[in-house]
Amino acid sequence: MTDMTQPGGTERKSGLLRALPFLLILAIAAVGAFVLRDWLTFETLRDHRAALLEFRDAYYWPSVAVFIAAYVVIVAFSLPGATVATLTGGFLFATFPGALYNVGAATIGATLIFLAARWGFGERLSARIEAGEGTIKRIKQGINENQWSMLFLIRLVPAVPFFVANLLPAFLNVPLRRFVISTFLGIIPGGVVYTSVGAGLGEVFERGESPNLGVIFEPHILLPILGLCALALLPVILRAVRGRAL
Image 1 (tube, rainbow, N blue to C red):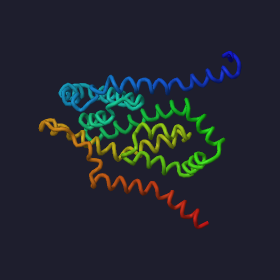
Image 2 (cartoon, helix red, strand yellow):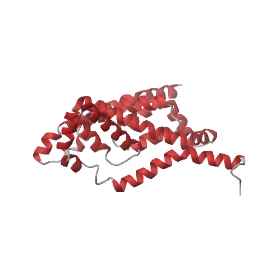
Image 3 (spheres, rainbow, N blue to C red):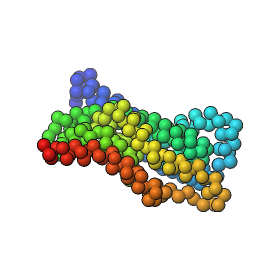
Image 4 (cartoon, rainbow, N blue to C red):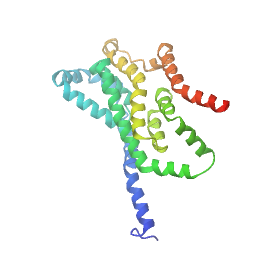
């Protein structure tokens, strides 16, 4: 058996330590999925809305700080309730500045899980792909040539899970600056839509109804987002056309 003081054992120990933050996130996410799924819900927001509004009115900036911190934790640990948190941001702080708080907190949380994944596995996985051959390496090279477009695309497409959009760039060794910028700008359309839904929750509560979370798939919302997706893909298409012409 290899001693931990030998090079091989030291390398394994270092790899485990590097992976520890990401493994901790996965463990908390798994526990949170069962423990918090009945708490971070629309019904909880409805039942405690009066207390939340009272606290906001009495302590506005502390309430902003608490809200952003809670949102960051939800995203960073992939806990259930991100959509409810976005609705809460709109309900408490209106579409603006609620959308700014939502998008900023989501970007910070996404960056934390991105860094944990890249530090633990992403750099080594990317290096192995680069050193290898075949289809996977060609796919990575294609993504590297169109990183901005691909990063914006996975943020804009509603069907791509937020958790996946955080991990994939980490495993492809995307630069931190590109990840942060594309995340912040890419989630603005969806963030504004759901924040505006949250801003109208007062009337929804009075009617005893539930919010329409499928609003993002309605034509007047979805078509502009698809237009942004097409705009993000335009550089990829132009590069492909030029490559064929050459």
